[in-house]
Picture 1 (tube, one colour):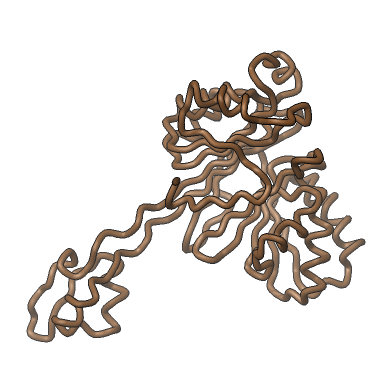
Picture 2 (tube, helix red, strand yellow; picture 1 turned 60 degrees about the vertical axis):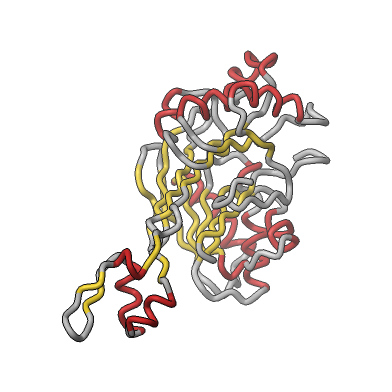
Length: 292
């Protein structure tokens, strides 16, 4: 943490369900300042067990308990994390009115969560301790009903869901109406990859191929590449190289060293390699469906 930047924590809103990636100190305060509804936060994904990525959990869970949350919370973390964090939460938040479930992960590539909206897949990063990246891939969305056409043809309400899923409609007279006449294509599904903390790695490039959005740490500028490698971090130039080589659409840079009072040089460095780069900042809100 620096006077300008808080510890790592991101929240994704997928169809009104919230998922948190990492939970640094002060997470509960920032989530509330941004008006996010903690009752809709059901999954927390911890990338690795360094304090700046998980020390916010006791405060967050305590806040949830004070708000009388009742639905369960799942924390995805390594075996050591489940044991250590579990003991900590049981001690400081022992009277919580909801269940905490731990889903133990490791550094292998695998799907660790799936629901009606998304799949979340882990893949290995290169850091001083076991660390994983997360790939959140939205499942296909439903098609859009052409209301006037459906009304004109007398399509009943109960048939709408089948239409949204791409099925044709058969009228009471047995006439088959093609789905394309009654619907328009679904909105594109979005994919988001989170890579922090990590040294530059070809295997990261392999695992984020073609994603719509990539968040990649950019702790240093490239003049400090040796320091970055020694500390198992990346430079802005390396983050941009990952984005370019993986063919991603948008890059978000973050996890900046406290040595920088202005991250513009890091952004300039990245944009020379990958123009569609931007800086992460506290309170930044991005509509992943609309890059601009």
